[in-house]
Length: 100
Figure 1 (cartoon, rainbow, N blue to C red):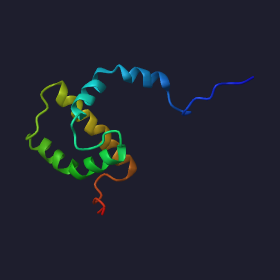
Figure 2 (cartoon, rainbow, N blue to C red):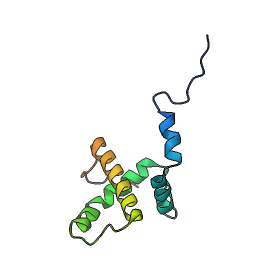
Figure 3 (spheres, one colour):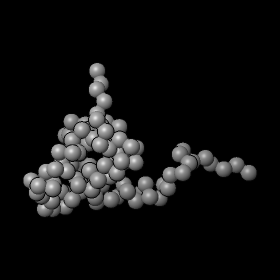
């Protein structure tokens, strides 16, 4: 008996297909267009968020950034996802490494 191997074991492909039609993901993709970071490179995104997150949090706390609509909420949720990823990696709050 032969079985067809899945390209990446452990990935729930039904979830992946559902995400392709996600309106929230579509909003995030629209917001990402034209950004200076390569948003397909999660390490580059994490580095960028790690460098700016303290200032963003202070601005949110001081109500200099106000979340008012779906676009704002989508961007904020994306920020939270990467902040959580940084936290789980043990990188959130650490000084950024200098790269030359």
